[in-house]
Amino acid sequence: MSTLSKRSTVYFEPSIHHALKLRAASSDTSISELIDEAVRLLMREDQEDLAAVRQRANEPEISYEELLNSLQADGKI
Image 1: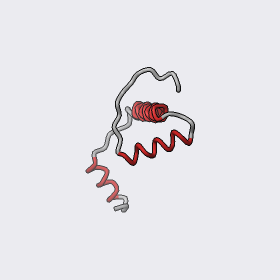
Image 2: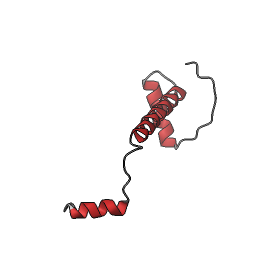
Image 3: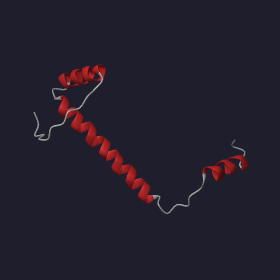
Image 4: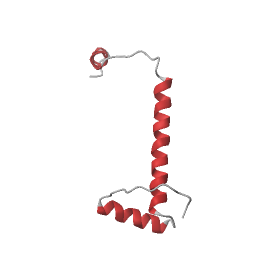
């Protein structure tokens, strides 16, 4: 087992838990390690999303109504 040190209780639907058990067994790892990696990936995606939002912070805003009017004027809807 890895050096994971904090403990939490996580509840899964039975079919998801079964799939996790099979995946853990087939990859010679633990369910905890699989979940830890999945959460890390999720947080990396969040970090990338936040960076993209920061990069676009100075772009002009357009309302949904303005967008629809623009699409209509361009003959796209």
